[in-house]
Length: 443
Image 1 (cartoon, rainbow, N blue to C red):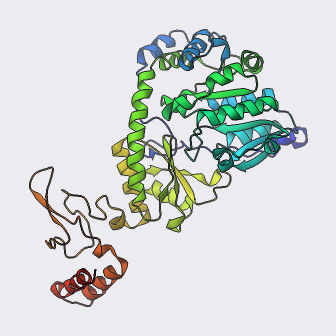
Image 2 (cartoon, rainbow, N blue to C red):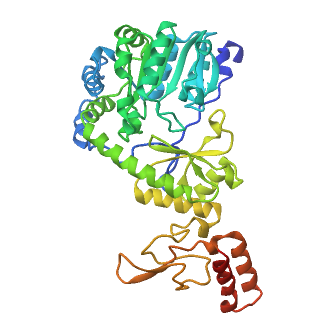
Image 3 (cartoon, helix red, strand yellow):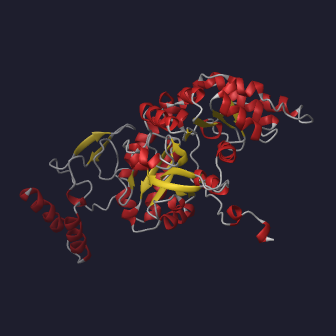
């Protein structure tokens, strides 16, 4: 049987994705809007009465809603059953066996997967070259298409609009298709979109997803934006009735709620800054700066692989995205979504437990926050009440608490080790305190 199957299909490996957690696991592996989607109960119930009929395959209302949302014509819109189907549609319409497709790394794996399925040969370049505007004409030469994810998954980098418009001009000049995946841009900065450019340029195509932006992964809805001529060709190859009746009407409803996305961006920006700062305090974890609703974490300082950390986090009720499937990242990175404050706090706590150094990762460490009680600390002298090291501060709940706001001595490895050795040897606390006194005197 195998000899009758296309070679490309025989050699494929399925693309790895996040979002495979169970109900009792908090899923940080899928980068979904943390706000609950706009209510669509009445719309779903009304649509249910029509399930005995085929959807209108023209999807007129959906195309118009999407067009109004991004500011183009309905003739510039191609509907899709989620972003992945649209990547497939683009590939099967544009890509031929033997074509070269240029793909920056690391990035979303579906570009490579779909290109290989149709016989293309991926040409990989470092994402930093895209970020720094270093894609030369020699790199582009010979490519059928260049795929750009903006914001980039999994790094969270956002390319400015002018960088992409310049790239669009160069690609068009060389008759190279520029495929720009803007699945996350509405949760980042929609001002950097080039949807309007795609509507006027035959060689530029933009992908959008409602799944991530409107928090509806269970209902596959997406769309593409291209020139009228390109969209007409894509529409010929599109599967009939690719949006079911529920996706069609829910998509129209969601696209009429831009204020929901405004609130989402405000929440994500606040929580992303908090989460980056919080995770930065955990030894061994280095969050990379991000402009998206997810954060890539360098975990090389933990001496654990991404697979090991993913498994440990699962044991604490948290699913993170093992990024070893992303080309060029190896086993040194995981990705986490930005969620609500309570969920983000739970993520940080789980990392502390998973890495087995709770005292170094606790929310009070290194004890420089006024008005907080010490809930867990290895300092045996707390509260020392030495005004050279701290002071009493008012608690928000009333009363006062000793704040170690000026102290970092006990956190110095040599001091901590000497204190621990003396205490284990049975020395009295008052005598061990002289270690601190000595350090205060010597500065």
